[in-house]
Amino acid sequence: MLHYPENSIEGIHAALNAGAKYIEFDLHLSADEVPVIFHDTQLFRTTGALGIIFETTLNELRKLDANEPNRFKNSIFNIQIPTLQEIVELLKSWPSTTIFVELKRASLDHFGQMLMLQRVMQVLQPILNQVIIISFDIKSLYEARHQGAKRVGWVIEAWGDAAYQAANSLQPEYLICDYTKLPKPPAPLWSGSWQWMVYETTDIDIVLALAERNISLIETMAIGQMLSDPRLKQS
Image 1: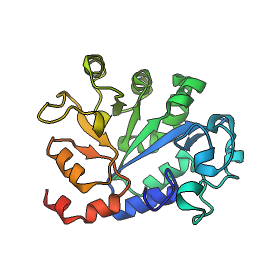
Image 2: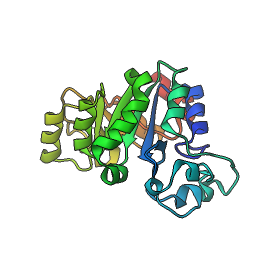
Image 3: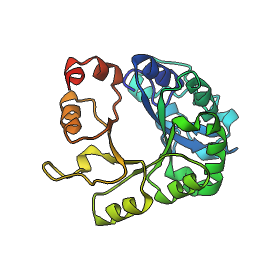
Image 4: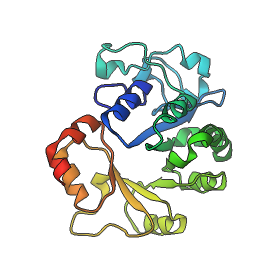
């Protein structure tokens, strides 16, 4: 999100209004096991406060301003860390939008896969058809399916035979990768039951090159600019 703090409900709302049909956000649990939208383990970069997200209660988190002070130089104020429940309520009005919900590894390790998935899946039930659960932690995706997730996406950390074998075992709906870690063309991408999704670029030329490789989804902070670029409309 170029113009809004990351993982903010304001930014998500702006992306929806710009025409985004796919939204990705990061998920931790608070100390009192409430699913909250937040990327880092440490609070400092986003809020300027000291502490760890999963050691801080929701009530304490609500007192923080998640305005990314270094990036926005305190030009934006009163940005709350949203709960997953708030995002679900918002998305009920956007039934054609698909969300990628990333389970952050630090919270999975802290609370355990089963408990974290229980808390998350309970909240997601009203919009489950819109949801893709994603994670770097492949075991959590097996657990997500066990708890009723209809679609999952595995974020692979390294290209190689071990990852390919793991992907074939899981058979996720999406394989997700940093585009810089993909093999250079003309080397093919792995084929399978999955679609490819890559992250993160704001460069339209890179987007067009990735699209030529039949990559279905490309994550960007600049959704408005991308959707308005005539080159993307022509591709």
